[in-house]
Image (cartoon, rainbow, N blue to C red; front, side, top):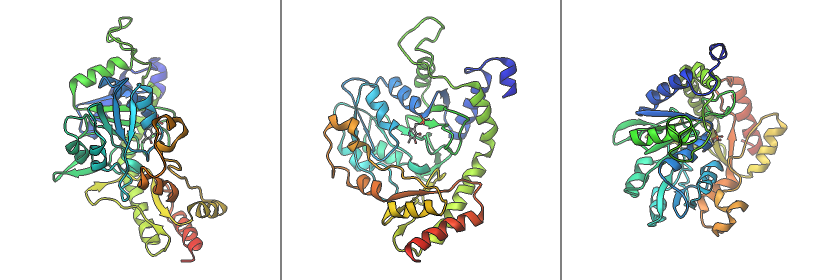
Length: 348
Ligand SMILES: Cc1ncc(COP(=O)(O)O)c(C=O)c1O
């Protein structure tokens, strides 16, 4: 960080370029382009694919708001399809069934750190670009046709968030876009600086969406630890899995054997979820509900005309999910305390 201060190049510059090279190497992509947030990464990705007014983008309603908010903000229409109950990720067949001649992209989300079945989505929708919202899954892997592929690697475009609560979090906002496509990468680099490849000359109208060099310095210091932190989260997850296996009322996360999750969240399904959450709070244990209201039922999307019951798995999940503390620094005693409090609630 002091190097950045000494150099006085606070926006983009050498630390950002180095981080881009490192994230591209991790993700096994030809390109990585830093930007201001995971939200902007989605926005820029859609602009790079010329998605706008009159277009439809298929996605999941069981995700953070940004996935669909950005579809709306480029002028396109979000088309919500249901998720699979085990992974909470978009159901490939449902995505394919929602395809129309206006479909310009599909956005699977790697929820809670487990990659979506991006290759199945791509196969079910041939010719439709796949934007993988990998905000929660940097460094996650999925075995595709017998080969491990990294989050972002197999999609047309992958998007990451460096929001502080992510496995790789900055000291503020930040994001990155990865792609194997040279032309898309060139376009993204232009779009993030107001659409001008040459300063003060603008080929198109873009955005101010750059990654700060100070954030890149922080992220570069943290990146070498990412694999170990994510491994520790997996270890914590296995501990909870075992400690909660026999608790009636709780269903521990289901990870596809062809996936290696980075467990950005450890999300159980729980009977009487809200009451359990209150009980844990009374024991000093912080938990979160990601996400309490699926996006197809959000007031801001009422204009799309969705009704309760149209994405039943997402709606059921919204009423049952609870994310327990999973961060790598948790001690064995803390894990026992959390699991013990859940067991206590259900009388196990
Ligand atoms: C699935 C998903 N998409 C998009 C985002 C947006 O990222 P950011 O907060 O960096 O804008 C987030 C994170 O907050 C996310 O979890």
